Amino acid sequence: MAARSACQNSSLLNSFTLPCVPFPASSTSVSFGSSCRANHLPLHVTASASDSRKAMKVDGTVFKDRTVLDLNPLAKHGAPSSVSAAAPISVVATEVETLPLDRLKTGYLKFKENYIKNQALVKSLAETQTPPYMIIACADSRVDPCTVLSLGPGEAFVLRNIGNMVPPYTGNSCSSAASAIEYAVLHLKVKHLVVIGHSRCGAIKALMGIEEDRSNRFSEFIEDWILISKTASKKVKSLHQSAEFSDQCTKCEKENVNNALWNCLSYPFVREKMSSGELTLHGGYYDFVNNAFESWSVDLALMSKVEKVQ
Picture 1 (cartoon, helix red, strand yellow):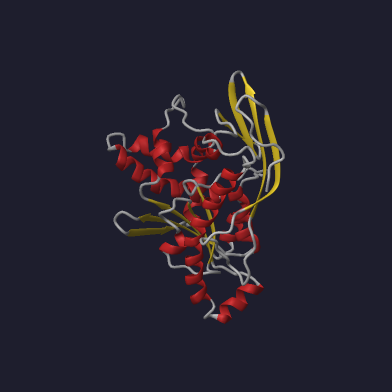
Picture 2 (cartoon, rainbow, N blue to C red; picture 1 turned 120 degrees about the horizontal axis):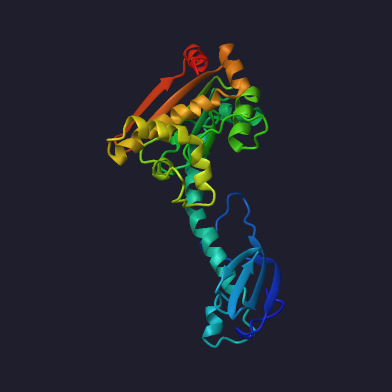
């Protein structure tokens, strides 16, 4: 598809809109169904000069010091002016979309082969889900809880985030954790809520490295999120001052789980379901380096006593 205005030279203002850029057909294209449809990528690309520097915007994202001409290697080597400046974008998009999907397609076909054998399960899950577990785990790619615990479809309602953390109840929270816990406990009526931490957690390492005055701030979003568990890091630093940093991190990885469990108890409906015996809370720790898994449970009576002392 030709762009509305072709690249002329880097000194000119360029702006063109591509309502629909089809991905070129290739031998690596994939299809998950009985028919294969062409993929399309809507684009709006703008290049402009500002203070002798170029900036390009693709669908609202600005890439500085790049021009449309820069993105078109064919144009640099004397290609005819009729060559669309969007062609390289289309090619790049195709490579990004097809190569990873080949791996995902293979994985899906392997899953499908086993899944369709259990038609009773297929029909049951088509009607509803009644998982006995809610699992809150880290988003770390090395510790997928369903893989580690061999849980199949319908067995666990899973929430994964940076550092398997749970913000405390505030009454007006708009966090994904709060809504997921509410849905699992009140609507799915899970029997067990399990928070699982893990070894070599990057979130905990970052948390333990934050200065008290936050003078070494390192991120726009991550730092504010992991400070949900600053109580855990302070406790570990206080009780284990002489320990190696790596050992402190390991202890904090487990204490972070306890902090998340404590925050779960700050939700009124969680305490209510625990008091009635309809819900239990558990902590877990997966050490993938040494291939070990620890678990523990929350005693609501004990927690109530601690709450009274405070």
